[in-house]
Image (cartoon, rainbow, N blue to C red; front, side):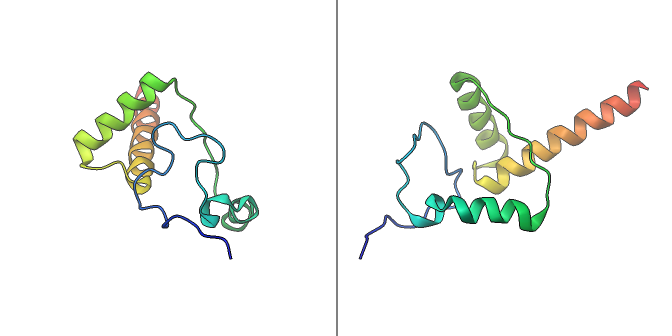
Length: 93
């Protein structure tokens, strides 16, 4: 039977420099599960790619402001940023 590391915590799972194969736990390794969840929940996806320095600065700011950089916190901050931008666009019109 295969041995796996403990399940990841709620802390942002891909911080800071993980590469393919670094996460051995089956939960994060099951691409079928991830793809199926995208289909099942029918939510929109936005992928933000950042240079490493900007990424580290972003997570540092989240931790300073929110106290952690759990996946749910990062998600909440991104939603706040999108809402703020959309409100500014509406005000500009």
